[in-house]
Image 1 (cartoon, helix red, strand yellow):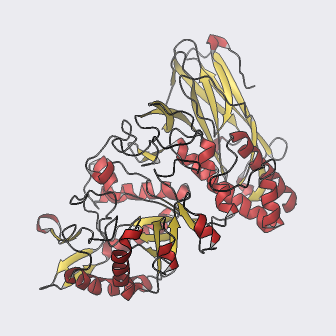
Image 2 (image 1 turned 180 degrees about the horizontal axis):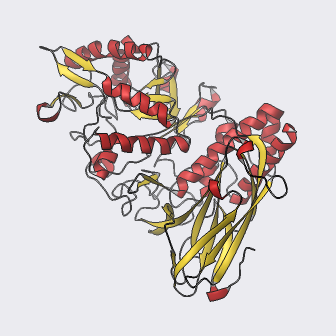
Image 3 (image 1 turned 135 degrees about the horizontal axis):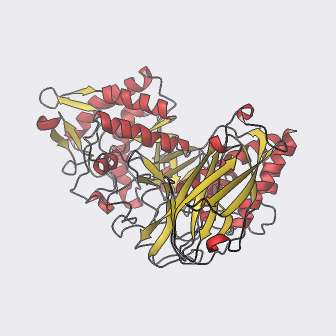
Length: 561
């Protein structure tokens, strides 16, 4: 039985939802959550908070459940934050001070050391198979008890906590949302000290891509050439160029697509459906060409970069030679419905003409493919420059008012007032609520820039993500990455798991809408909420969100009977 009172050795335990953040130095504020429900094919998580007045070494954690083969236990580790918030913020943050925040999910290897007078937590996660017939029989037909016991090295029972999970016998539908979270290949190579596109680098890329896919990413940033993203003007990031380029005479080039072929196959194996080709002009105005090199190794020579004017004859000629071959590659591999192109990231109105010129250079050869762009000014869409605009969630209003479709949105460090986000300092409910907002507004795509950006701002130097979580004092902790570099691959953050839960909410709502209609699904979701439910106006507390999901599950169960 779950305990809120001291047991042997004074150990305190409390079962909490995945939306609680357990700070080592604060009393627990959230109520116990000892039961829940999930659909088949869903990943369900909860936490067990623990505290002892004295240090306990050699503690073993033991799981008892018919679902043990689908269950993983991890420790919620603390991560430092020197920049938890910007000065421009609202009142809906957990903390605004620098310190240690619960974030990284660490493997529970061997025994657990419990430090004195600190609340910590275990993350309990059940990956429910989509095929219900694979599940063992539950004691009462649909509800599975789970008990986690804490045992002293002497064998003495210190305490136990229990949870009951009902598995609704309906399978979560396939994800319709297109989700990209920018994947930084150079950061993987730098962090692990491997040569770019060596066999070890490819192995790690595959591991990280699978992790991204498992957490709802189905579109991967694909570096045709080194992505010109978050790079200091005049500086450069490590070369990660899938397209081989060879000079074949004055201003003439030959192209090798073999690495791109391997990338496409890697994506298929990892579960990635869409390819997001990296930007073909620099960020902040489309003024220059990205870094493009010819040759390799000692013979490598930079052809283009910051020194190259975007509209120069040399770069125009290069694109006129490369883009027709890329278009042919796309068609030969039947990727027409799976590829998306960028021109330049986050253009503003004063970049209108340079962006127009750059766009025309690309669409001369690529007009039959999809183009999209993170931006905030409606004018780029209005005059036809960006067919698929991706406005920030706090600038989406005009795009909603004009019923722009397909409808996308994004957030990053700039979205720290009123709207959803996933900073360390925010409540997890503010992270997860996005899924319900995407459903409410029929949003078909979501973009974020930071899956694994482990550099300082402008990519000036490498950082240790376990010590520096704000890109060198540039962005609120939690903006630049959602995974940490473990020895053999990514360590998830609790923010990454909670974001996946938000996408699962979206999928469950889509299922309910298919069974009962969207209007009824919204009524069930919004029960008890008096506001308008917008991107900047939504329920803030975790209990409302948890209850809403339980209502959705119950409605699905009833409608499917």
